[in-house]
Image 1 (spheres, rainbow, N blue to C red):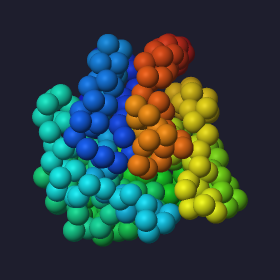
Image 2: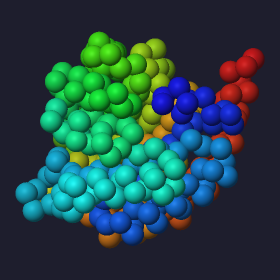
Image 3: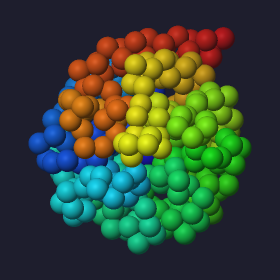
Length: 271
């Protein structure tokens, strides 16, 4: 699948986008339909993103999901309704085969990107594997994570940059890592998670969504193959990661601008 996503007839980047977590069927279908309308018009290959469960939460009373099977069924319905691939996170080796029955891409969370059994289990499902780069790892170290997937017999793999820990409560994006990691596999930029401000004393992660376009432009300019963006009709009402999400009505203009930038980058690469 990764070859298809990175070789769009339009020459455009590809996009993984959707809510942080599945909150219900209506919201998932609404977001998928809205994003698909934009990506279809602009020639952007689209993968709907939604976590069926959030395992990494700051507090024990944080929202984690509506139930695994219920959320996974919604993800499958999104894919079947709109004829698009779907991606979700997994957290343990046992979840790999379960989730693979419902989705097309299995995503390895950043904090788990070194877990050999998890990577191998995801690989053996035959699904595409998207590995989030750990906030604590160098770009060069991601070669080993990619090789674990390939050693398990699966070459359908990509890497997602999502920022590097900076102090206790911030992340920075070092775009030098994108061309480095592209030596190992296609690379996405997780625009919204890289703008998180984690570990706040309140137990609720903060963020800087006003910098979304800045980070996205930088990633496209240095050759990122795709973007990862969490979006919601009303981020202030989102049950997870609302502080760093893109408001859904801002997505069309952002994608239009980035499409122009991608075309310019493609033109430069030909010379």
